[in-house]
Image (cartoon, rainbow, N blue to C red; front, side, top):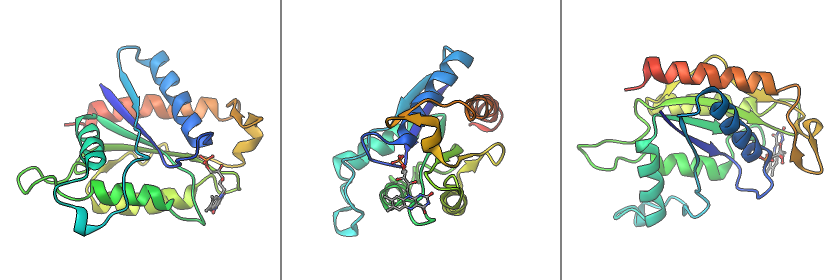
Length: 186
Ligand code: FNR
């Protein structure tokens, strides 16, 4: 089983990226044989239909990585109670068909949603919007459990995440997502 993690923040010290890394460690304890990769996508350009064909190299690469993954695990903050613009841009690229025969890479893909924010919402608003967009794209969203961690800075010191109260919830999501992929994955 190969899981591809996507951090919705491009920030170097992103809490969400650190959360994704902690998720990879949790998955490793649970299923040592499972593959876990964190998608590098900071070179994906802005969506512009003038440059869509042929796909820019970075777009072709991320599409391929998403296509090969058995499941996508998203870790995203929210920006102004919404999906961060860069992440929405990435999803917009992924939503475009590779070819008429192949379709787009998110269709049928198992997806788990996690996120953290500084504020009290824990990025739940962005998750709600992700559910809408990803449902439209026919992804298979794991509705339970989702993970939305508020006040994330409390679980960090000097910007370094040291998950404490949220760690068991991350483990639970890892377990559930493995089962979800085994049940729902194609
Ligand atoms: C934020 N932040 C934020 N936090 C929140 O709880 N609700 C919100 O609506 C917003 N809005 C928002 C907009 C923009 C443009 C930025 C840059 C930030 C704060 C956010 O939670 C904080 O910066 C997190 O640390 C971002 O996640 P990463 O980069 O640490 O993963």
